[in-house]
Amino acid sequence: MERLNRDFHKSKAYTEKVLQFGEGNFLRGFADWQIDVMNKKAGWDAGVVVVQPLPQGMAGMLNEQDGLYTVYLEGIKHGEALKEHTVVECVTRVMNPYESYNEYEALVRQPELRFIISNTTEAGITFAPEDRLEDAPQSSFPGKLTAFLYRRYQYFKGDPGKGFIIIPCELIDRNGEELKKIVLQYTKLWNLESGFSAWLEEANTFCCSLVDRIVPGYPQDRMEEITTELGYEDRLVVVGEQFHLWVIEGPQFVKDELPVEQAGLNVLVVDDMTPYRTRKVRILNGAHTALTPVAYLYGLETVKEAVEHDTVGAFVDALIREEIIPTLDLPEAELRSFAAAVMERFKNPFVRHYVMSIALNSVSKFKTRDLPTLLRYVDKQGKLPEKMVFSLAALIAFYKGKRGEQTIELADDPDVLDWFREHWAACDGAEAGVRRLTEQVLGNEAFWGKDLNDVSGLTDLTAGFVAQIETQGMKETLNRLVSDSVRAS
Image 1 (cartoon, rainbow, N blue to C red):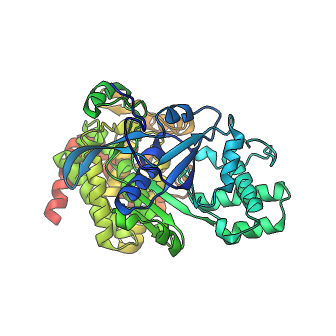
Image 2 (image 1 turned 135 degrees about the horizontal axis):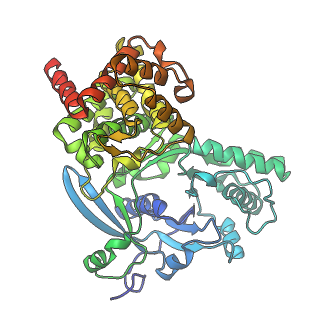
Image 3 (image 1 turned 30 degrees about the horizontal axis):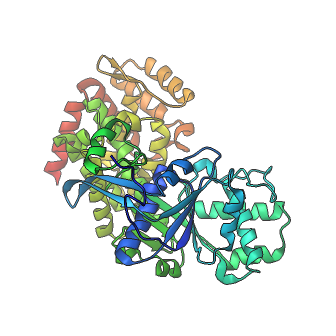
């Protein structure tokens, strides 16, 4: 069987407009896939030059395939479970600056380069004070970027038309701002001239971005089957879900330069990405965290089983529609559309997403993902969000560490686990003991940043749910809650 390369798969030669730091699965299955779609559907003509950010990486393998690889998408699309694959053709070459520094540095002289994108992991956007301008290359990604931008500034003599639109994809909040801050740190550390600092500000745009697509990567255990289906050998297949979302915070001209609408991509260029980040954290991540203790104590193992279950699925759906969405500041129709997409993703038949894999550090996750919804709902509605409170109660019961006679393998900070172990051991299971335990949990400011007993009615409602879960079990308690909710509506 033939190996995927440009002799086997004839493809267009694109103009190199994008410089990409990072050659891993996510960028190839997310950003490069979208560039490829823009090229093929909107005639963008954008080639991607990829820079391997670490000494070890995939540059050699990618170059052996002439930058080509297959993106294999699996999931629910327009209500139908689909598998689709396409050969991504936009990557022109991949460089390892640790081995070919001169070739890498020569990129500063290419006038057509306009965009810089990156994904060097969350740890990649960090300041390394040992980096020097004369290093070939610098150890950190921001150090490499600063040196590259400075050489560009020097070569084009400060031409404001030779700056970049820089869109980092690392999973840290305000990633563009953080990257720019570190670049300016290097500018000061290296005593670079004020003209360069002015050019950085005037000719370059650092965008914050939010990325969303599950990209499991290379499907090692299924490659024989996939290779037969493809009809060629590809050692760089990237598996991803159908859903994708890229929110880019930037000025209008960024949208003008990216033909995302013509290509039909789910890319938003906005003035403020904060509502979209909040939407993702509260709906997608918040629902994941809220359903985990409920589903697991009910006896379900995966997210798909949970959302397709008559009772647990109804609980999750109502939680999102009735309690999470009303606390958010985007148009309701937009929020409901996003929520519907989230539920489709949860039901992806090609992914076995175990709820216990979400359970890691559930206390801190509830604080950041779900507690803001609970408190905002109280502020806006003047009452408690019953289903979110039930999830909080389920979390407390979950941290007892038992599902019937089965021990739950809890994974959290040792201090958190020790605290729950001690306090559950002191609880006799009687109503008064459960209430005392609940008061202690809600009053632990190390968990929540405040004493949640101060929220009117929260202690009573939570303690009541914990007691019911303890005495009657999760199934009976949740069945009654969902039935009562249906009758009330």
